[in-house]
Amino acid sequence: MAFKYPKPTPKGLWRRTPPAMFPPMLGAIGMGLAWRWGAASFGVPGEAVELLLGGLMLLGAFGLIAYAVKLLRRPSVLIEDLRILPGYAGVSAAVLLLEQLVSVIGPYAMLEARPLFWLALALHLGLLASLVWVFFTAPGAQRRVTPAWHLPWSGLGVAGLAAQHIGYSSLATVLFWAALALSLMIWAASAEQYRRERVPAPLRPLLAIHLAPMGYVGALAWELQMRGLGSALATVAVVVALVLIVRARWLLAAGFSPLWGALTYPAASTAGLWLMAAGRWHLAGALMLVLGTMITAPIAFMILRDWAAGRLAIKTNAAVA
Image (spheres, rainbow, N blue to C red):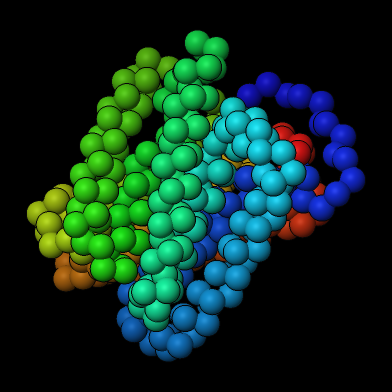
């Protein structure tokens, strides 16, 4: 990513809201949902987990409102954010976050959650259309697959989980197959790309995103009673997670950056899958739940602290409305 001199931000609230704040929010809410499955294993009261989810939900809603204000000031700023990698990942994470909120409130208010789901799904489809336009209007050198592609495309699995949690099983099945097909295509394209090219150190944390679809697509398979596919994805996730852990020093060689947000939601989705699968997967899920929480909490704190201090927008070159 080329460095650009920071643009002066005009006066006005949330004109330069950075999308890079959304990946750690997505990871934090995902970890809260994983704790729904794993709380009993650690003797944590379910009420405490729900209280945590409520607080995270308010934080996510605040972030979404802040970015919505930026879009209302100048809607075309969305395209500018999507043209840079932190913006691409961040805007995509924002849409998935909205879909995760459906899963948070679904058990309590299924009918009331349905309008929110349709809004989130409409925004998701609109995002995909925008990304297709950005891709075909970008210079040839920028038309390349990155792990961040999993968020909007494979992320249809998150929409599928939300649909399943509010009683739309048929739609969840359609979204599952779409997410699985897109995941396989992105994995295949990425594998070929990595065979030919070295990954620059600052971009290596994004490689962890390849783990995320195994978690949420696998969890959706499990909820749709496709146990064979769910077990297969859970098994592959073990291999990928071990590789990432063993290569952690190489993965994080460039030092802390906002891209470390990409480490949070893969850990959350994988922990959720293994805990949901239970049985022989329970121990792996419990370990990932603890490890993921230890990873997510400090990363989310540091990135959100940078947002509050006004540094995150400059570090990630967020567009100005």
